[in-house]
Length: 274
Ligand SMILES: [Zn+2]
Image (cartoon, rainbow, N blue to C red):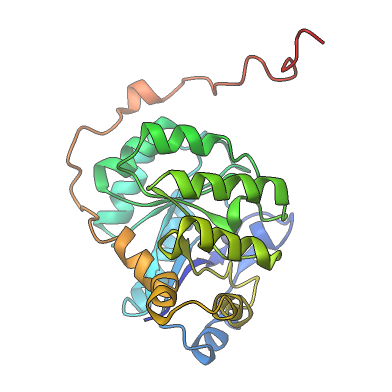
């Protein structure tokens, strides 16, 4: 079974670019069907209210629950204090099985990681090249599965992508997806060093073509069993333990709300002796 683990759906409420304007599936779906893709993980485009956007995705998933999985998009700052509520609704009412976070919105927080842990949900976090945080995520939340898409950088920052391979190799709970990665040999190196169980096929549809992105995985020339892991087996493993009831107390609204966003106190002072 082939699963595209990374596809956007629904309307954004901005007009900045495709990423916050619309992610209609009209062209994506026949392309995916022609490419032999069986199931697709859907989450919203950028939106100013992910409670609204996640519900729109839920309606799309509900039309074809045999074909779609849903991930709840969460804004680490704007949704501070309500992550547990957003995710509980997504899991319990909509059958979602993961969390999407994007650094363009805000950096990931402990609140999000703790909610993910309570529901055993994988977290797809786009670090936008800020790969160093993966060290902290992997060590603080070894029981949470993270997928760092685009090999760490949609804009193909090879330094970040190369650094991510190191994390993939060292941390059992860190994965990546193939979506949008252009430097093919970095994908080759990722699989060689970290193993096929650390790479997930994803397209970043509907903006990228699922068949083109699938072709990249095929061209890795993996053993059939390894290719099956990349094309769906790994994803199914990551969602195998999702719980609809949290197994521990969730971060409380009162505690999480109102905390200022932490910043790096030494940013810009990395070499104070110079
Ligand atoms: Zn994306």
